[in-house]
Image (cartoon, rainbow, N blue to C red; front, top):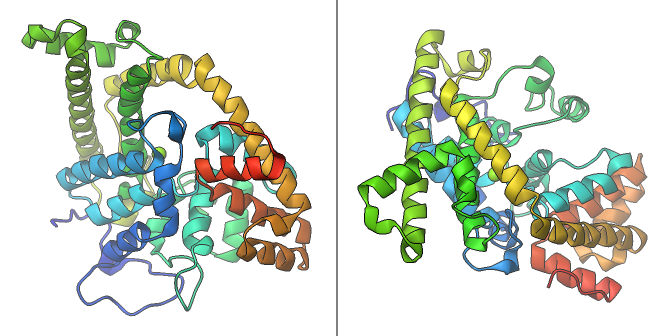
Length: 391
Ligand code: MG
């Protein structure tokens, strides 16, 4: 790997919370990536909703395939910019580990349930997963990842949560939200790769589901220009039998254009800032960026997807049911913690006996629900309420 001077160098990592000897053949960021791939939270991503509920079709993206696409785009851009690919891959594969079942509907419902107990943020939850909830090592909770990977996982954080983090880990991953500084360029890259990935795959899944049509997409110049360009070069793709090839080729061109745009715009920004180190990037405005025109086009596409896909009546209908499942589960477990798996009910009892016991014990319920796959949550809901939703 040819690392640029502004890339994160694993040899200069700020380290792990629990010191460990170096691995003989792998860098620290490779180890982080490997730990994430072997975690149980990572395996659960395959049964968690991205936009379409997991059981609605076998070809829709799940959180797992989404994360793999983010990692692919991230690595590709990282290599071209001389950034650390292993770190980018580790952050990308972990960035959605804290997502609840049923996508944003699940997270909104859980956040409402937790309103009086510090709320629920999926980014912070991803950090909880890798810091505390995974239990696979004899000496510590969590995966004991490096500072740089954890910094990238915590994409957003409210001020109050940042203050809480800072109190338990002074100068740690919460600090930048209080100082208003940036994360590493690798972390910034993962945010942008996330956006590029979901914009593209949600067009694909949206058309596949029949909820949006190619005609509707004419309102989105970023996509439609490439659709026209493709048709001009390949007129035989006109007609319904070839619709998918046309769709794929237009998305492929759109993805490439965005990747090349990010690389060019970011190179300009990095040159302009004359960065001399990875830390110098943390003190600048975000440098990983689209050019102005692409930024505007991407915003139009995002708005289109919000109005026509994420808020589509058919999506909203399942959203309502998903929220009910999460709310009902929360209510039942809170009243009858013994209904949770033994590890969690034991943790609940232990938390309840500590100072601020109410906040701590409901957090255990939130952790338990957040960790569920869609189908496990629906099954538990049926077991506990006798009601069949979302199946
Ligand atoms: Mg994501």
